[in-house]
Length: 474
Image (cartoon, rainbow, N blue to C red; front, side, top):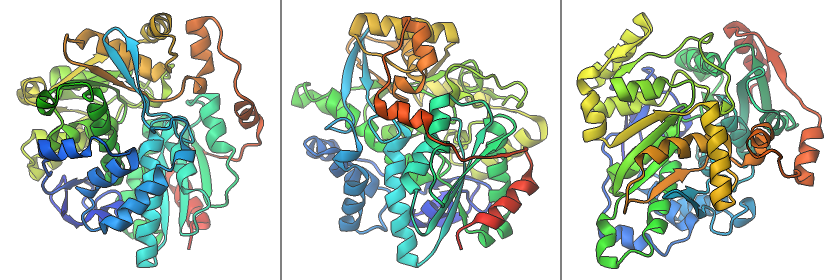
């Protein structure tokens, strides 16, 4: 399979875009043509384990990796001891017509592990094959950073520089990242918000001379490797949700997915799953108070907020106002027209917004998206309601998803709510909702008490350049 940029450049194959991250023209890598999967093939996958299914799904996109090598990579990524649940991604009824898709069973207790564990194996494979090195530059609003660092820590060919916004993550999220002492892991707390961190990453990635000199790559959701790995759990969830459906009806039995969304990467993976052939009725996008994406899907106008306008909320991993993955979807919305896509982002840079109101009706009618906004009061109520009816405690981001999903529950259409993280990562919010929070396990208490290593830095491009030049893997 060949890949192209959303702005028109040919990019090569899967392992090429895996290591490169942002395209040289500033766009994002997308498949030149998305494959389709027959009903018979889906049915043949039903009995597969999660790593076996990952081999099949990712293999549709990673055609340049020999199948036996890919099977070894997925087996290592989804090895049972790394995950709390035996079946890796469990499905749990939480009442109200909704089912929780458990994506937080991995080492950092967040859905980002599902893609990042694979990316760690796949990147090391690609680098070893070419006798190359990579310095990963990323930005996190909470969970991407820890998932990336746990996936890449201690790897000889890889350095990782992770930017996070000072004071904008939970204490647990900070402890997971900053307590790591591996020499190849560098945590940089930037003065500002997540979008400032993301802007620094994009600025340095677009400087091709600096990028090449420092061997920079990316593991946040601009890397298509993550998108491909996330598609797997959409296929898995549909297969599990339809296990009890009569065999003759399975091929067309539709489900809806509700996805807490900040950077648009997770729900984009659901969109690709739908393109592959998974019968998806709706993709329900849930925003928190930073509801730029909800505004776009309701109006067709994309107007990111400034750093000063981006709110600090109780679902901090979604405190994003510039969704870097939206460009991939807009590329398809505009008929895969690279010139129009590049033009939209030029307009965005010049005016602070772009207007696709003419295309807005297609977002629901053709692409199946719905959206809504959740507030702090909403998520507190939803955490309480879900616990009272099912005994399951969900984290605040997942509560945003469940709260918005409730509006779109339909008889006969399972509503699958994608979990963001384990609730113990956000004890203050859980305590507010339930009156108390369970005593954390000894391992969590030990993590919170561990010494932390982090570099504090102004929102300063030159300072970041100098730090990377000094500490990059050579």
